[in-house]
Length: 590
Image (cartoon, rainbow, N blue to C red; front, top):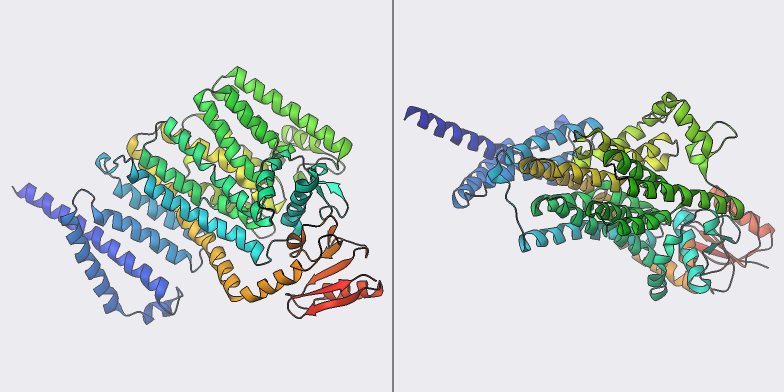
């Protein structure tokens, strides 16, 4: 009797501690979000009323006690603790945080999730509307936020010529002449395929022809990226993951920082890599060779260097699964395609852009020399992986931003061969081309597909309780980082568009009056809005004074560069036809 009483008292004490801790974190988060003096220094603590905090904690504790009694199967106080800690983490990091802060809060979140899922009875499977409704709502939220960023970058004249303006003009040419020509990419009339071999873009052409606007491309990229959720869902279900675990992984996918961050710099052909690779992985797991090969062909058509992803997967299939037919076809086919692409680019185009692997190529060398460096001098390659750039640890931060949102799942396997699926990220780390190890550019889409494939495979080999814990951790960390990295950009763009709506409307009205049959040289952020022209140059790279019009973006004021442009074109006989301070000016050729 005494032992039973002791156990009951101990359980009640534990429950009370959980409620008090959750209530305290919730009140702390509210204070951090809404208190006028939003800072974490010592003075901040002295400005907050302690009795108010205590009253809030006690009030929430009482409410949780009532909920626990009325809704016993759910254990509301446990889930409230997890939710309060998640919101508190966002509140703390919204004031700024170091890598150490991220890791510390991530550890606390993992501990909270392990507590919530401390026994199998708390890991129920769900289906029907209980699965699809939250899936659509949560994934839809991340989709809409990412879409807002993509659209408002264009609407607020924040998308530059490189690369958005280039692709806008390319699609204009494709919709009229069916050829991917541009003039603003290399300051001359040239096929974009002379720079990068990306016929995959033709899949977007029918939609552009129906809606001939740059917004079609901005929206198209977001739709293409989020379409990867379909093969990921099918893959997760095929590998035996429950509805709830699948839901968590899809939330982690939709909130993954590299997915939304990759849209911060507008459309790029790499967006096709994510869904195509996931479809290839799904068809492979289903044993459908035809689907694998069609997906692999699509990957090749993305860009000449996309063959590397197929080589990695082919090696994985050969070593880890001993599937010789699939592996050899993928390996041989991808290498053959790359050789053909190199021949076309070298013979008819401007060659392979191997300069991005400059850390591996000696002076005067080429792509073959980079491969030789890795094979002959692996120590040099290893040094490059996490090498700081000056006093900045960009590569280390990139690794954390890629793996932390997945709760380290790609590493959690006893099969050494599965680490081959991590190989694509090495290419991003070996280069000193900073954009390739940043989640805010498009170079992580292919890597992301491999990481999620490995995560699903590893989850499928865990017990059900471990699956729930790991998947919920990944969903939570991805969502927290999404709120911290992506949401501020969306909010900033919305405020900018709201506050300067009339200015952007005015700029639209002025540019719409420019005839489409004239040649134009324009500032970088104006190029996408003038892309329906056959002759269009960016003023920074165009050395001549040979177009009908020069249009200058004056939102940054009369900088030295703008003054130089005006002097240059005035000396060439151009006259200012229109100028509005803080907006733009239009200069006409003699």
